[in-house]
Length: 245
Image (cartoon, rainbow, N blue to C red):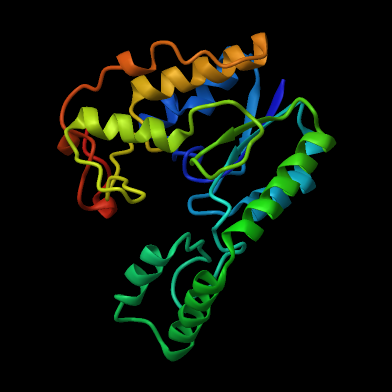
């Protein structure tokens, strides 16, 4: 079975060589299905970005898994003067880029334009367009698994969003949830993959496997998932030095 995966950071690939590559939920799911996986997911990306990836590649796969992000993300990557093109997924992330002292005048103008888009964007319109895209995905390939990342992610599935699971995980790590899209600042890729620990990844892999085989999700056991230790164990400071074991 050939499997295509689309979406944002909840499904984004981990570099081989880190332990997280071996337990990322979509990789272990492919093993359960005796399949091979091509992962198109990209951190910070929009539904539209993933939708375009899906349209151009879905016919190459027996099964597609589409992880549905927030409908309120800007729809394309931006190219600043330094670094690779990137997705800037919200105003808070935009503000963090503004703190970069290496921005030139063109970079600042791009960020100003993007801020204008976020401030003027209509959530009702965004939800309507995202629903149309998801429905088109299902029409084009009816066996596609669509799974929500956030409470405002339309997927057509009766499922607990990934971000709600992630909030549970943070609480078990002893990190107080502050009401925002709260993630670890620097995830240790030997301990975290797709924002989740190995135990949560195993749960998600089994969850989607059972959906494929039985047609429904079974969330029993979600609240019993154990987390090894505190948040510091899963976080690290300098990605340029590689992940600590």
